[in-house]
Image (cartoon, rainbow, N blue to C red):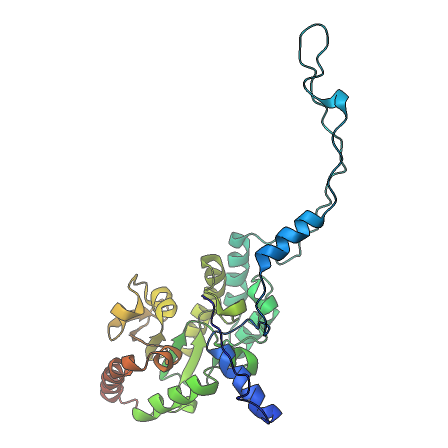
Length: 302
């Protein structure tokens, strides 16, 4: 879908900071292509370019299948000999098959005995191509015992630019959500399923998700949360195992294996970024927050 925005004359005299803020808002809204003032007919330009290209010379007459010897058999067409097209050597990351990348991720994550070591292992890991296009790794935040672990799908545009979770407007909304139930960022842990934002904000592929999951699973083991909250469809499906989208899964409780001998309850909720774009869903989020607060009180966590 193409979105056309005309701001001619509306930003006259605006400062550089104001212009940068407007451009940042457009990017967050999904506008990622700039066009000129005058329309262009790309189809006509391509056709004109093709007509302007030199016409290839006709093949020699002797090469024609109609040039038949007296025996009555059609002379075979000669196949021109061309130099083989050189093949660019694959980079080390792109050459790793998905199975090997997943196995390497599991080994790297399993070798980390602390959260700090896990973050270092992820920073050194080159088995996921998403790392090449993202501005920052935005994996996890939190200190001390994890009362509640919030797990989101992947970094947003502001997260990727600033290198921290729930940045920008969505982060302000998330902070207000926490405050409404007696929590703060300092009292919870945050994590992403996929720590690198895909180019253009596209959904990560299943192999990419599978490659990132061992690091999230190890983070859950090391942080040992008492409650997990999944934010969004991707996080909910891959953490809880349900196949339901977030519209059907939200508000439901699941039981998650934190380790071989420990489980904890998990609730699915809307992601703050989705709530900001679809304000009508905030009423559902408020009901989910109240249910979460009830469980926090029962466990003595607030």
